[in-house]
Structure formats: C-alpha cells, structure tokens
Length: 266
Image 1 (cartoon, rainbow, N blue to C red):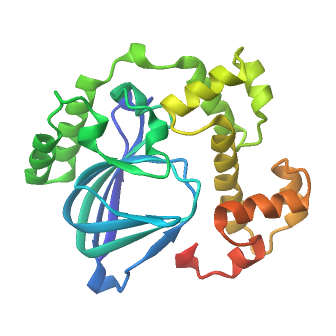
Image 2: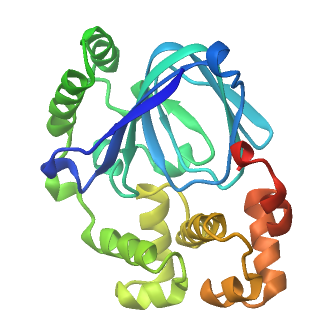
C-alpha cells in the first residue's frame, strides 16, 4: 500500500504554507525500500505517527525524529521507509517557516532538527504530536494543526521584500542573476545573503541554482528527446559545458545518464 492525500491550507495560512500531505506506505506490500530524489528547495515539518524513516544526504544518514523539521538539500538524497509508515508532512513556502522560529535556518541546510529545537521551550510539541495521532481523520488533524500554527504566526514577521524576491525567482524559473535581484530589491549582496541564510536557510545564489535545476528536471521529464542546446539557452547557462557541470553537481550524473535511469530513481 502506497497512498497519499494532499490538502491546501486555509486562506490566512497560504502565504506561509504550500500544502499538507498525509502519506501511508507499507514497505512489505509495495516492495519499496529506497526512494531516491534530487536536491530540493522544499522545507518540511514532519509528524511521524507510525513506523520509521531514514534519510541519507551525501555521506550522512539520519533517522527521522517523530516530530521534526527537514531543511533544504543541495545534494541528492534517498528516503528509506521501514515497515508500515504513516506521517503528516507540512510543506512550507521558502519564507514561511522563519516567522515561527528564531533559529537561523542555515543550521537546517542539508540537515534536520527536532521540532523542540525549532520552537521555543514554551511550545509543547510533544503534546501536539500526541493529540494529532489520536484524531480520527485528516480533516480533524489539519484543524488542530492550523489552530496551533495560527497562535505562532504574526503577520508583522513577514519580510515583504524577500517574499517578492523569492516569488520573482520562482516565476523566472531560477533564470535570475544575484546582482540583478539586488537592484530589483534595492539592497546589496551582503544584506540579501543575510536575509536568505537567516530566513530561507541557504544563500540566494544556491536558492536560484536549485530553483533552476528543479524546473529543468520538470522540462526534461516532459520531453521524449530533449534538445540540450535549447535547454542551455532557455535556462540561461553560459554554454553546454556549464549546463552539464551544474547538472552533474546536483544530480550526481550527466543529463544523458539521468535520462537512462529507472523512473523510480529519478
């Protein structure tokens, strides 16, 4: 059994949260013991209700804490569910998690932390986890979770210039130069870098590169025979050598080798 249900947040939480996803998987039924994926700009809060999961990033491997936060990765990673797994995944927008915490998010880059480390000591995460596990259905769990999040969020904590910059990067599919972004946001590189590392978890250059890589993969998946030179131009690489070098940096293989890999491993 491998199934998931995805839900959108309430309107007032959409500036912060992309979606909620309930995942249920039985490893024995599916014969799945490893899922490989590529670098991500996503940031997730996880509540694990049943089973165990391990994540490997580069050379390091960690077992998920029952209540944890997973940061962004600039390396390929793999997920290994163990036995029957049931969890709730909250996918945040790039600038959506920072208003909840004062932990500099660069500490979660290529890493994960227990929610007790992310929130203040006054926030009873263990109690929330226990209550969520007892509720009978997805809707009830979301209602409790959103009530919890609303108590933590403050609209004044939003960073509107950074939000605009992130939106611009995503709309341009990562085809943005850092110096041009600084001009557009009326700031300098030092300030922009500080905003990103503190509130997003990685540098603006890395965020732009990963956003471009994500959209590039989506384009490649949709083409039976990709025109590599067209992609070089479309995604604003200097030349084909630059394209191959950056692709290999994030995917761990060349574009042609990526196409030859089994779909599950892509």
